[in-house]
Length: 463
Image (cartoon, rainbow, N blue to C red; front, side):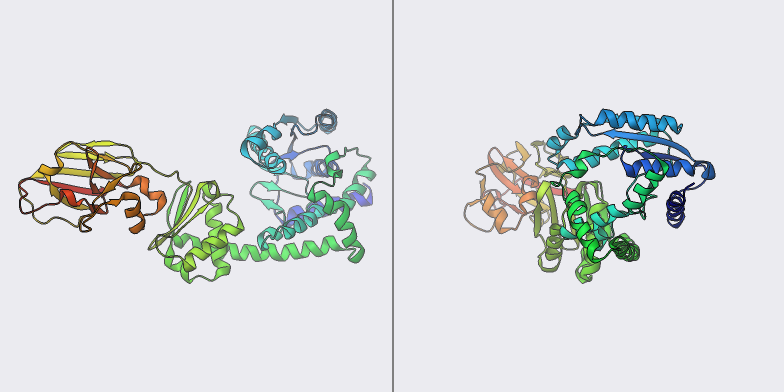
């Protein structure tokens, strides 16, 4: 083996050992594009195949973006794998149509679909690891891309050498070394024409910016790599703190919502608070995609908001500051349906998770608090009662006010959040509101000294 080949192989082995990327006897799925990085990766793993008793598979993903080049890349990759006796498969995805459907840019859509294919073939082949060909120069480009976009320490720590089952054995090897390795090996490869187009930020950095930086610092790759290593180690430390902190904060969690205890958040240092909120968002499926700007808005809500204040963020995301919790949710807004209230009996309000029970009595002890329990003159209300959500133009006479009021204005005065108003249960007789359950009764149906029959209502939440 040539000296340059051996040097690159030893460097790759050192990276594999440093990050515990592989164990003996594992099955490895290799992402193969036909480009120099992935071809080098395949050769390196093939050279280590006997030493580590590896079982290799290779996968090419056709994104449907370069139809004039793809057939040659598939044929090249297939021939390469055939010569190395490595099973090969090619899969196709439709990136452009998916990007349009999901309102994503092409790069994001391509990545999402590519990893879906990786997952599927990973399972089909019974693989233990997915090996990708990212190199040290990719790290430089990623660092400056994220720097220009205002990333924090985690983003600036770059592409992780290991992430769950994904490994990157060439992550500490420069593109120049890969080129020399392939030239000495006499191994062919193909160039993706999109890598030469300056319309992509990564390519502009690769073709224009990094060469200029190398004039000032010939070892810019090593310099950035050291910075990333430092940031990555610090992130591990912070991750431990954030994990322990978040475990104590979670009050309630579903795929679409997470509730955190508020008091510790209010006293938390901003550095940790920002990370805790980001982790909470990342671990809640329905909240992913929330931007840094939104995290800062949430911190402002925690610090300066009043109970009941909320943020309405893009994609239907809402953050609500309650008295004791911070609620972050993407749950759909609830509008209650119409339910008949039979007397005696109950109306089960499944949409909002509540029950209203009613009965007619000839005498009662106390009239309740008017919010969760209320008593009315049954001869005025009648027995034909229904429970429904608000409707446009609703009016009623709030008990104790002495005059008519629009329900909309009442909700504003009572500080009922906008996204909860369609879930407020209204007990109505005909078209007249008898009771705004949870809030106030109507003065027209109040109990007087002349009342003989009493309508007794009770409202309770079931979830």
